[in-house]
Image (cartoon, rainbow, N blue to C red; front, side):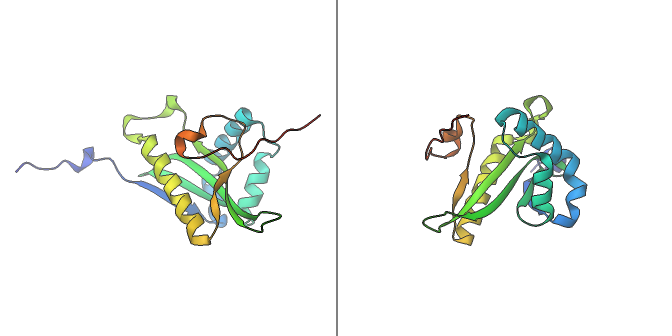
Length: 155
């Protein structure tokens, strides 16, 4: 039987909540992701809103890594629906490193699938509906999301 070379075995994906007191350690990476999402989706929040929400424990930041390598992050929080009072587990922001920065062993599809499974489990544990998210971008059906309603607005 031959030897197994562990250096060629990809490290597992880890999903870890960033405690507010350690936000500074990851903020440079997270800020780049928030700014990227902001450019693409054009939401009305600014990066400082995300920082404050995580820092004051109004939202949770999870880093998705493979070994020491950051693959992305997501930010969640819970909220109550105004009429049914159902608890929702809201995916506020999700970010993965861009294609040009990916390495063959990163296996982003696995990291995304694990992140979504993690969020589903978190929602279930909290007794919440979700994960739920808002986005102007199309194509989230490929991850198992279904479209709920369309927001129409006038300027």
